[in-house]
Structure formats: structure tokens, C-alpha cells
Image (tube, rainbow over all chains, first blue to last red; front, side, top):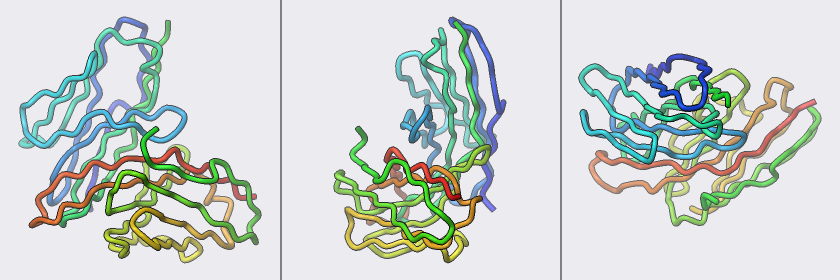
Length: 113
Length: 118
């Protein structure tokens, strides 16, 4: 059974702090790992990672994948209150030509002013 | 706006009612998905349609019945639901790669329908 585990489950920080969110996985037919940010509605896409060791960056957010150790991290630097959300990690392990995502439990990030 | 719309956004129904959730994607994708997100639980994949054919059904109870009349529309028909079915129901779409299976499709989500079953 495919499995995705995120840690920590929740995190409380102050504005300006740097946070690291973790995602480990055990899946067959790995194709990609995705990070989403979910606020009060549907998740919004952040990153898709397919290759080990290549960092993806978008502003204060960055992410990297380690396919040997089967994990990914999401870093957020200089956090702001608007970063407060649930961060979801998902792995595409469809094994066929269609997409099939398995999600982790999510990390609830709270950023205080 | 992600290009995936869902209606209604909120729904309250009794256990004996029959209702339908609608999803429409304007992205030209050829695969669509229904997910359920309950409080304190990970997102659960319910159904996958690729090229209008159902390819995945993750042991979902028969009181949930999907329908995909074309590649742009997806419905979830609900009947005799239980209170524990109250959740956020999310629709997503992606572009399926017609290759050997090595592909990377990103799923784009709609805003969801928040369902409350009384």
C-alpha cells in the first residue's frame, strides 16, 4: 500500500522564522512528488519534483527531493502570517499513464505576528 | 481561478435526499478526479476518470455514484448519505500523457463543495 507521511503535524512560529516541513514516502512506481498549500478552500499547487537533488524555488519557498532516502523537504524562509495554512505533500504513483495522487496528512503551519 | 469549477459550493442534505455535485474543467484536460477531505484526515481519492472511462474506484460506498458524460464534466450523485459523509468534496483534472506510462501530470483542483449531511 502506498504511504506518505508528513512531519511535523503542526508547527507554530513567529514572523521572520524559517521553517522546514518534511515528507517521506513509500510507494511503488514513483513518478513525482508534489507540494500543495491549502487555506480555506482547495489546495493550490506549489511544486512538482521528479529528480533528486534539484532544488525548486519560488520566492521564499523552496523544495528538494531525495529519491534514494525517499523524502522531500519544503523550506519557507522569512515566514509571514499569510503563510499560515496546511501544507500537503502528495506522491504520484499511478504506474500507468494517468495521474494518481496519494496524500500525506498535512502539516498545519501557524505564523504569529 | 484554477480553471476548475464546482457547484454547489455548499450543500446541506438529509439522509434520505438525492443530490448531485457538479465539476467542470476549462483546461482541456482528459482526466478528472473526485476527492473527499474529512476533518483531521488526509485527502482521499474516490474516483478517477480518464478519457471519460472510470479507471479507479477506491472502495467507495455505492451511495456515491460518479458520472463523466464528457471530458469536461464530472458529476457525483449522492443518495442516502450518512452524517459521516459530511466533508469537503474536491474535483481535480489533469492532462493524461498517452505514452508508455512515464509521465508527470499535475492535478488542478476546483474550490470544492462543502457537504453537510444531517
